[in-house]
Length: 153
Image (cartoon, helix red, strand yellow):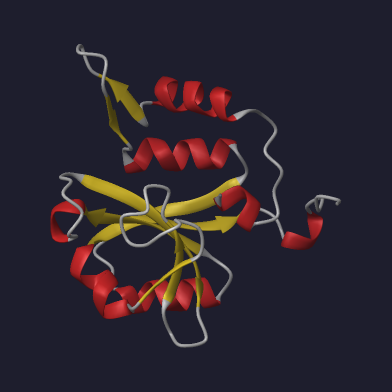
């Protein structure tokens, strides 16, 4: 999702990206076969291999995310599922990629815990702050957006 947001076409399949994530330590397979992750520093290393630059940040407030997004960056933000009324525990990553006209954060939430259907979910900043862990990955393109091939219809 972040690559597409920066106008990048990924050079590989999702399956290959998952294999890269396991190799880099983004995702850890436990003895019972379940997966733990995603760990921020290895995830940043993976993003860099895919042409996305950034930094691990924290503590940060939602206002900082608003500024970055307005400057054409994105935030892969960590949220605490226990603080969201979704019946789940642990942490979850959502990609904040825009600010709506009404000031809401616009994000991609693959699990739909902050809103359905998961794509372009608009969340009021105060609601987001209640579950935001104050950390994540600040992401930016390694190259100007105009240098990337745009998908054709």
